[in-house]
Every structure is written in C-alpha cells, then in structure tokens.
Image (cartoon, rainbow, N blue to C red; front, side):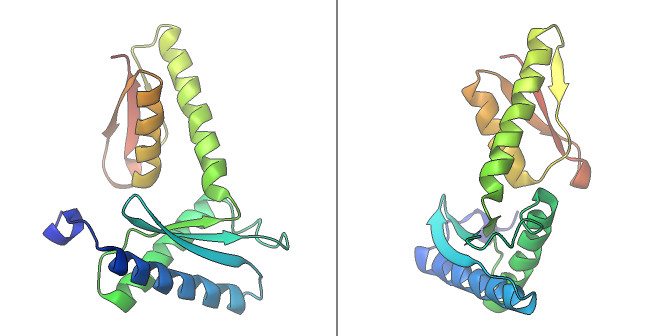
Amino acid sequence: MSETMNQKQPTDSLDREGDAAADYIEELLDICDLGGDIDIDVRNERAYVSVSDPEGELSRLAKSDVVNALQELTRLAVQNETGLFSRVILDVAGSRDARQAELTRLVDQAIKRIEDGSSEADLPPMSSYERKLVHDIVAERGFVSESHGEGRGRHTVITRR
C-alpha cells in the first residue's frame, strides 16, 4: 500500500469525499428518475453515503452486488474529482444492515460446522469491507479468521482459537 493509503485522512478531506460521492449518487438517481434521500457521515475514518428509500423505488439498487458495483463507480468518481484514493462506503435502502445480517448468518453456519467436527470453515469470496465485518463477527464469537486467496477469489477461513 502507498503511504497515502495508510495515513489517516483529515475530516475535511473525508467531508469533501462524502460530498463528491453524494453529488455523484444524486446525479445518478436523477438520470434514472429515482427518488432517495442522501445522508453523508464520517465513521471509522471513512466517508459513508446513505441513500434512504422513502418512496420504495430503490429495491433493485439495494441488492448487495448492485450496491458493491455502485460503490466502486462512486469511488472512481470521487477519486476523479478529488485526486485522492477513496474508501467511501455506500448504503442503499438499508443494504448494509441487510448484508451484515446475512454475513452474521454465514458466520454462525460456519461456526456450527466447526462445532460439529470440521477443523475449519471457508466462506465464499467477498469484498475487503465484508471480510472486515466477518473478521469482527468471528472474533466476537471467540473464533479466529484469516483471509486467503487473491483478487476476486479472496475469502475468509474460520478456525478455533
């Protein structure tokens, strides 16, 4: 990783990143003729952009794979505007909470396999953000996890302590 990726970003830089991401998402929603309320926040040294769905129009955009793709496009747009590496997190209509619940179920199923006698349990490939969430869930459950593989095949393996 480059030095700029390891350094903490100042809050004003994260605010600028959030604003650029929100502008991009707002323009995308306008092009698609979709509604949505956009909120910007800074958490865990990352800009978070949340799009709420008061009209119930965003269900197709709230699917995990679609949100991940939109997030990558948003990151590219932010990087293009700011000239800085972006780690913006995008949430559409509660998709992050839904994915967190899904990841928790996956971890619980994997731990059950270990408790039933398996020495380890592999989870499917997922993004670095999702793997971080998995590592946190696994640690809360008292187990150990490591990421294995490269690129799109990178996944988490869970074992006992």
